[in-house]
Every structure is written in structure tokens, then in C-alpha cells.
Length: 175
Image 1 (tube, one colour):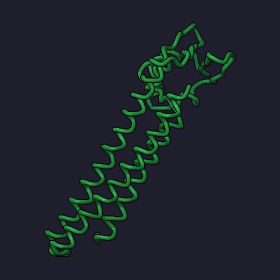
Image 2 (cartoon, rainbow, N blue to C red):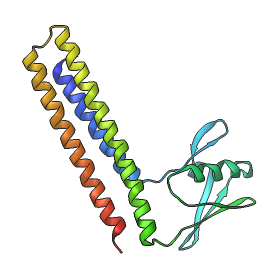
Image 3 (cartoon, helix red, strand yellow):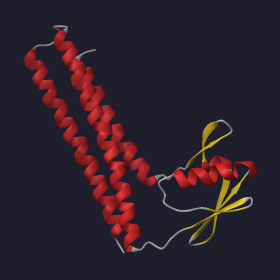
Image 4 (spheres, rainbow, N blue to C red):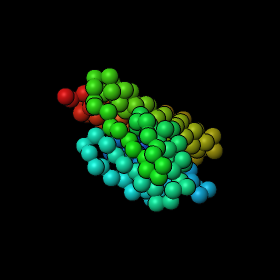
């Protein structure tokens, strides 16, 4: 592996971490442990909205109702399901100031996960560059330069994360 490949791989991994975070904000998929594997909620049930503040989940197989209810309780959506036999109702609460702040905390948690991924990419890239230096494939100066480049990539990725988080927080706090 060359130094250029290490830097390219680090940049790509960091970009994927930022994209994943943005995807987490846009897409709320609840994963259900059922039939011995993890499946998306929409693969196990019909989700309808008969009223503006209510989601109704009708499992295709009634035996998965408990699994779906457990998955919703364990998810980050912060809504308590009400199981009624073969149907699960999710009352969507009014977005009060307190609920908006709670959602903002969730956004910050997802962003911190993304920052951790970016830092892990940085650590991996620097470790790989140090291996190259140890194997005498690059000089100490090249190692120092590569560490600086990796840090620039890290700073850019963290700035991108902050930009997305700021926009999402502004969206949530907007009344």
C-alpha cells in the first residue's frame, strides 16, 4: 500500500462517515429482530397514517407484533408504541420545546458517532503510514507530511459534520 492509497482510503472512509450521518438524519429505519435475523420494519408490516398525529403498524404476521414493539421501544425515535392485538399504534407527540431539545440531543449523539468514525479513520491512516515508515518505504519527513494531510482531511470531515448538524438543529428548533 502506498502513501497515496492510504490518504485516498482515509478520505473516502471519512466521507462515508459523514454521508452515513446525513442518511441517519433523513432515514428512520427501525430494525426488528425477527425470524432469526434483523429486518427493516417496513419489510414486516404495513405502516399507515390514518390521522396526522398517528402511525398505525399492521404486521403481515401477527406473531411478529411483540418483536416490532420491542424494536420500536429500543429505537432512537422516542415514541412509546401502544399494541392492540394485531395492530401497533404510534401516537406522534406535538413538537414541544422539550421534545425539540430531546430530538436535538439525539442529533448530537448521531453526530458524535460520526466523529468517532472519522477519528478511527484518522488513527488507521496514521498507523498505516507509520508502518510504511517502519518498513523504510517512506522517510520521516513524508510521514510527518502525511500525518498533516490526514489531519486536514479529519478537520474537513468534522467541519462537514458540524455543518450538517447545525442545519438539522436549526430545522428542529424552527417553530
